[in-house]
Image 1 (tube, one colour):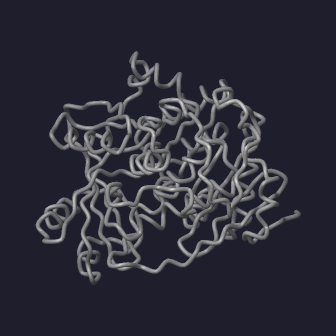
Image 2 (spheres, one colour):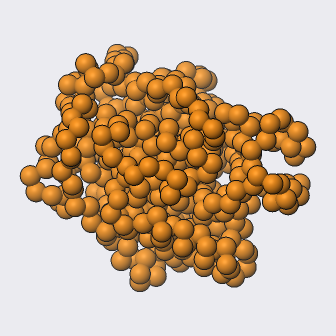
Image 3 (cartoon, one colour):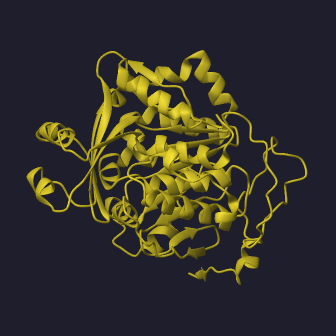
Length: 395
């Protein structure tokens, strides 16, 4: 099998402008910009593309992030948590939330991986309501607070409201460069397929051209993911799936096998890629081999799949058709007063999608994702109001 890996730099950028990113055509983009690309060194004000309202839809679990920074592993060991993992809360974790909320340095912020990505997307595109986010929340003050925060960040929400459980929350424990996530899904765990058939939601679904699903949402309501993914395949629209966490791959193998044929872009980190290989008995931990095999999995349409494997230190790997593999180095980060890795992956997705829906070159999309993730590093939680105003000159 031939393999090509490019270490990308300014000198090699000319190669990237010949790298296809969208092997299909859409009709709503501004006329005359079909072949528009920008130089990596071009600091001129870019042309604005008039994205339609609701062009991107995100499906995830809206949660209140309860973030606390610790200097040791005492609380992790107390509740049997790993230093860098994401899990669903069990009964033994009930006391964890109470303990965190009683700490002095606790921070509350609107969260959930997908909602964070959509808020970063809006931070970059700057025009409100280009993205829509949905998930289930309780009929409570917390749900209202999360919705107000999302709308303040320019994100339109179409939540499914639930009486049975309160709005969910996520304990975020930061220890140096590591973060441990424990999600108490609450109402988010009750999302149901009848949301798709409501008139307002049907309108939003018909308008969107890009659909982003987290693995966390797949674990909650796989029928919705499969139904919408099949609809996208039949109507020539784009499906993006984030594996999200190792436990998703271990527990949702059948659901994944049903929807991957419709997925155009797969996003995962190195640990998740290896876990996918393990659950499918691929007998390899080589991320290059796993990425290549993921890219070649059967598809229900002729559009080539794109696979991105991220890592905190190693380069971002991008797998395309015909065994093309691109490598994007991640610049070293100098931590400021705060170093919070929670939300970095979410920010990467938001940054990538903000340029991808504008049909920018693949290099530009990924560099924007890397830039967004680095901005979030020095802020506790994904707090858009704490980030500088986005400018393409920064990338």
